[in-house]
Image (cartoon, rainbow, N blue to C red; front, side, top):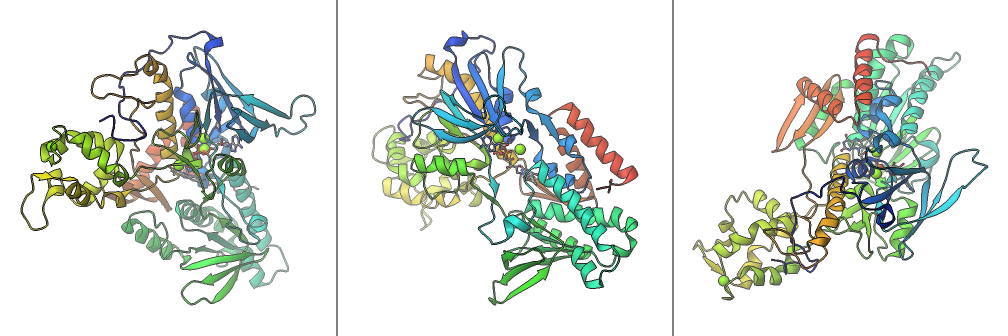
Length: 549
Ligand code: FAD
Ligand code: MG
Ligand code: MG
Ligand code: MG
Ligand code: MG
């Protein structure tokens, strides 16, 4: 099967290189990691420093647990409870990982060098700018907010991407309430100050709306009784439904819950301008435009490309893309020794139709020019590893048995197919190709996967034939990255959460909230943050949230 792909798979090894069997430091290859978010830290946790000289660059010297950022905006959880110093995470027993607090401003792939800038204030002595060499580069810089060049957004909206954003929102929400109760304001002005607008009905926007609603109705209306009837939350969504990446049942459950809670949902509208006082939008169906006054706007409509990545993509001929394209082993296309993972990259999956002739030839062991069901079954597992869309297709067609693929439309069972028959049997498979979502779950799995590959690289170089099942002729001796989806949550406020779990299982309500608490507690990076987060939850349930500015 080694001939299946021009990319050159298909062997992989299950065994691990023995850790600790170190090599002299002058011979170690230099691995440079950009970013300490989900992808970066998950790579760093497992990388074997006895084999590599590892350096990390990131403008923030901590890892932030982003799924709890919406809780930070309302003080349900404190900011300090969801961050962990990078230096603590990367401390190793048998070696050292170097860390520099700086931003990478340029990548020079041809010269194998990156250029960095330290943003530490008052850094008058020493280096503000420096460059570093690498043998392998791991790019995990994530993405930035996307304003779609909408006028006024950058100046007048809040974002929710970083810890500082969440802290800023927390202060501004309280400001809105304090402003609304100042003497001498008209009813209209008070209402405007207490109008919270959220642009974007994705998971982040929905979770923020839910948090804010709870905060207002559990804590703030008791402290600002005058504000009670004036406060309002509005969500603007360009599509027809909120949470449209989730199962329909969840999306309508969320919409109904929000309606009951008095959160207004405006769908089918595109925001065209945000001024200091108003949000202007177009109604898609009629083309009409309208505007609403606001006290604060959260802009949460998806992610865009960081400038350093944009510049790098132009260098390596990946123009006009939003994220870096990699192969299934996370190696950046058109570039040696550079890997990219997480939100700044996406895997360019191979189409099975492009390789169909080679697959046919490799599978046709007896060179008869036709493929028997048995011949096909023999290679199916290998095909699924390389082309995961095959498995998705079989699932979507409810085919438990691959021989169904060979079924003749006239009803007679074919036992042999020629190349044309093979092509038509698999012709719809590629329609199942999906790019992976920009989530922490994907980023973390990619980081863990890549460190496993790095840790075994040495061993595979010594034993290029690979073990047991497969043979390899090329550089790839690893199974391609394969994402395992463990489900996703949508906390909806009022101690209710919706969840989409593996196997098409949807669960909603109070019991799911408990599942959410336990999963999020268990996913914390350290016992310190775990204890802090859980005690924040307890503190809130006993004393309420802290609403001082
Ligand atoms: P990030 O985690 O963003 O990390 C990027 C890192 O690169 C950071 O350390 C940054 O400081 C650093 N960096 C930036 N620029 C440079 C530079 N020029 N040079 C060097 N370093 C740089 N996902 C889920 O799966 N479940 C959730 O519930 C969930 N909730 C979310 C809630 C919110 C509010 C947000 C914003 C995101 C949420 N996500 C969730 C998505 C998840 O956070 C991202 O998919 C994930 O962070 C991507 O990981 P990453 O490592 O690619 O990027
Ligand atoms: Mg990262
Ligand atoms: Mg992060
Ligand atoms: Mg990605
Ligand atoms: Mg044959």
